[in-house]
Figure 1 (spheres, helix red, strand yellow):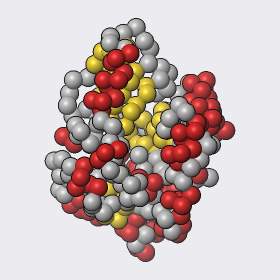
Figure 2 (spheres, rainbow, N blue to C red; figure 1 turned 180 degrees about the horizontal axis):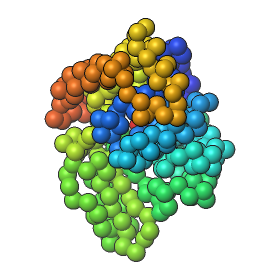
Figure 3 (spheres, one colour; figure 1 turned 135 degrees about the vertical axis):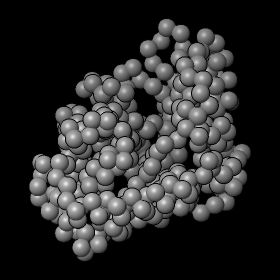
Figure 4 (spheres, rainbow, N blue to C red; figure 1 turned 180 degrees about the vertical axis):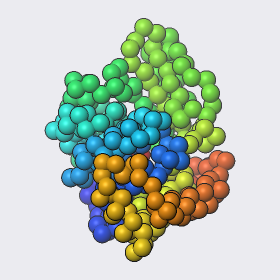
Length: 306
């Protein structure tokens, strides 16, 4: 959670925020394209009052798309404890909880907010109610990445290898669990322990060759790479006057909307196919180096989502 002055400079106009119906329609479309996992991120997804219903609706899509098998969420944990059980019942499968430090004063310095107790309470609650990805816990360390407004400098980068060396000094029997260079997370485990340690090494050892992620921003743009400022609007197609009536009819047929296809609906899918396929051709084999990224124009991480 960033400090308030940073938040004020990174607002998205409320009327541009993607609606719950648009989220579900695009989720259904991308399931037809083969998406297996959907992660809800932020800013902070729990600020949406309709989040529980979104998860419930996404869960219903699993009945129509057998390969779509996971709904995940990333949260700062501040509001999570209150809603954890209801989110699990709605169909949320796994949760990532952000924890900037185990020292509350350091979190306050980094974010301007005293969130340590909330994050820890969220982790404990997630274990209690039975979210699968936190039992056993996997602790992930992320290399510091340059984004708009985060004052990134190369001297502030604490690399994966530096982190690994410090941990290995205390736990020399650390075992590497995956050897592939394109895995998103480099996983390790101390012999005999239940939990795992992961490293996301975007800056020093990128994993672009194995990245199959697409991001849809809070204002409905498709972003093909976290570190690329290229975007295309998907909601413009959905909000087209002619298309919006077709989509309204699609929702009116709930709960059978996933089974019902029409010529008009397929035409919308064709429009989405064209713009998505064109965007995918612009996906680079590898993102730029850290220094180049630091001088590039991009959204803040708050606006992109993790």
